[in-house]
Image (cartoon, rainbow, N blue to C red):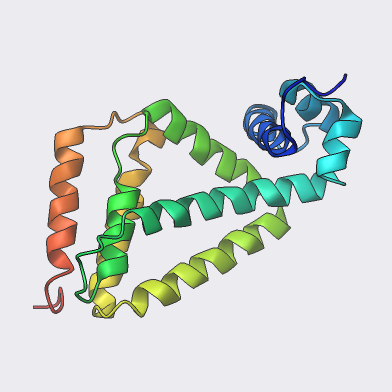
Length: 189
């Protein structure tokens, strides 16, 4: 299958990652490169041009998801906020962003579950989580505040997985409560 006319190499690479996400989410990590190439509208040779092996494609897909969340947190940083906890507040805002549709959130969580069944990807995710833990705990807040706020934001952000609808008003209220906690000295008192 020839490359679709007019698609740049970057667009083809993005189409391959998007197709891999869909195919792996729906068929599991055993999905074939042929399935992924077909879903992206490229030949298997075209896929292999961009990703020399399935491992490289899967690793790039996982890294892309991790990098995307990191970029969302960076975008949520308030330039006027210079107080301790600035990164933690951005993490909360990015985690509780209600602009995503619930189906997309469920699909992303399902994809992450498939990807982390691969030991190499689980290690990549663990290393990223350790990096977040270091950065958030170095953000100038007491450890108990960071632990509570991040756990609450992470938990609330996965609610759509269970078919719970996103109640925008409730999420906004939770966000404000968590942000307020980041201006307190400690939760132990």
